[in-house]
Amino acid sequence: MQKHVLRHTDSNQGNFYKAVKLDTGVAYTCLMCSYYTPHKGSMKTHVLTHTGERPFLCKVCGKAFKQKAHLKAHLLIHLK
Image (cartoon, rainbow, N blue to C red):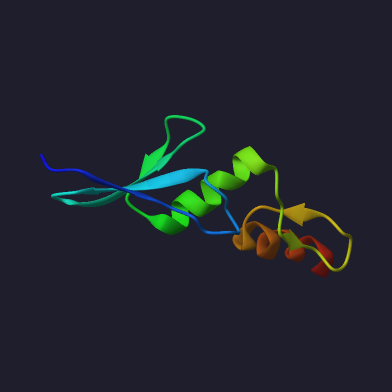
């Protein structure tokens, strides 16, 4: 199987993962652990587990979340 490694240099994510091009497509591999996925978006979310970044902030109470979907679910508690 032919592999070609491409370094990912997204300034927002640093060098936390690399893209490996395979005959069947691309796989993104985390350089901090053994996690891998064929989806770049999933890898960007995974990287947050290593950086501790929580970019989605609740404007009501200030609680922060790693994923937008988790913030949306949280906002429902303020509607009660």
